[in-house]
Image 1 (spheres, rainbow, N blue to C red):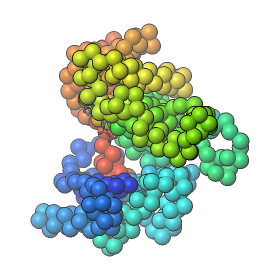
Image 2 (cartoon, rainbow, N blue to C red; image 1 turned 90 degrees about the vertical axis):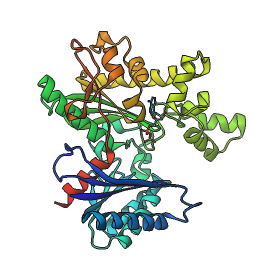
Image 3 (spheres, helix red, strand yellow; image 1 turned 60 degrees about the vertical axis):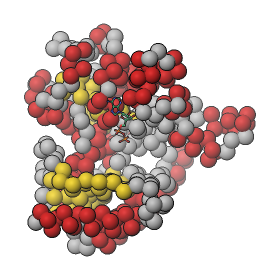
Length: 388
Ligand code: ADP
């Protein structure tokens, strides 16, 4: 069945036609057509105009191939506490996504613009919202709660939500299948750490298929060091910078989102560039990398406690899938906790059955794996399952 997956960002729209089944996302998820429209607000007037262009491209493709659209799946960033599962789009769901925009002011309005435009362009095709936060709905209270006045959570929804849910769900499910097939580990008890390392980065602890902790929070800012985002900092930095530098809340927030992380520390957000600078002996790039790696290792340590041990660490997204260098540094010297990387397997990282590549030694108690994420396939699969 063919599903159109739409991911509306604040200034871009990505789309992909995915062949999927309503069951588990186990197939290769062959993609017939994909593309991206950028510079919305400047080159393209708005999301509706972008969706019009996409609708034309998709309809022409379907006419040429005699294809038919079974569903449209929309990536929606924030589902708040309300959405633990995908939702078939109707007027109430659109209203709820609007209300939740206080929690994701850049993303939810763009997501809704895309939904409304798609309803106009594809009347009669069922549409489903798949939330980036939903997979983390299972995180227990002690792991999601902030130690702040209780009223902040009750009245202002201040708590950990977590993001990258479709990626963590997709990768952890493949990882659990691999552990069952290769290590006879029952998927209802498997203990997995997923490291989604892209421009945005987050970690997730998955116990028996359910997220029990994740590094992002109320927003996608905290946790790991990212391309341009700081990850964890002392929240008192807001008051401090206001007093010593006269910076407003908005200015600090913008700097933490856009001018921090790797780009803040060493002026390069692209990990390939950072790595080649390190090879050339650049001390600034090395210092930034050391922070990046330290933060990931700290999270692995914390999740080992939360999970009661680790059966597998799965690396995914741009950096996790492609950087043998980062994978080696993250796992270096962790033999004492049962993790041993195989340098040759890590360098080659060839995908086996299930789309999984094992990069640990045969003696490693925990499996170290590279598992390419496929958020579009996950969204398509969840959209079909929700409809059927
Ligand atoms: P996004 O969060 O935008 O989806 P991606 O998952 O595509 O990001 O990851 C982008 C990151 O992956 C960039 O920092 C890029 O430098 C990094 N990357 C891609 N290929 C490699 C590689 N071969 N080695 C190191 N880093 C890589």
